[in-house]
Length: 117
Image 1 (cartoon, rainbow, N blue to C red):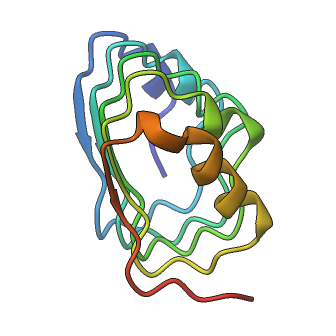
Image 2 (image 1 turned 180 degrees about the vertical axis):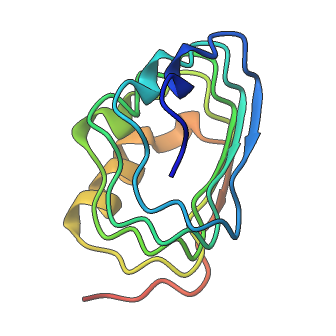
């Protein structure tokens, strides 16, 4: 569990929660407006907060093998995203369509090991 007030770290640029036991990201996570790099690989996450896609300068996102089965609609709104790793995720329509909407604006995409529900 992340501490209360976590979303007030408005200058945070890099965050590595890989291999942690974080199952839920706090409400207000989208307020981390300076966040450029985020690693959530192998976290037991099942979903992301609704405002997750409101990270305007996020360039690299690793959610590989995280257990995610759904993403919020805001996921497709990343403007600065350059690198996305979704290796080993169970793809449902939501994740797959969000990745498709990111489209050609995404120069690097790692997708090995996709499984379908």
